Image (cartoon, rainbow, N blue to C red):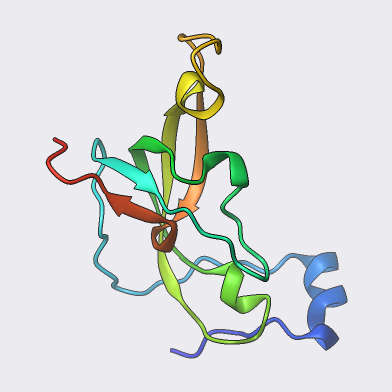
Amino acid sequence: MTLPVLTADIVPFALSRGTPTKVDLPIEPAFVVGQRIRTKTIQPLGHTRLVRYARGREGVIAADLGVFTLPDTMAHGDIQSPQHVYSVSFTAQELWGPNADPLNTLRLGLWEEYLEPIEGAA
């Protein structure tokens, strides 16, 4: 299956109509719901959907949202990288420190490439 590459000439059309990035490919997920993960600490030169405040933080896989193309590579027209996207739950204290409300959490939709398993975590 060939996936579309986002090129400059089709950006106006894609933005005006919306272009789905979910793909129907039989890719095995690397993570399961309930698994503890850590986001990678990356400093890319170009586009990434991994926000800085969540880099290097621990969270829990809350849901597998399916397979989508990775916008980091699609934005540059480099390679098509379909992979699972997960809803990852973080405590507010994990993201913003001990003074954050311990009852608050935040969920982020994160591509598999941004995540790594926490060794020995259940």
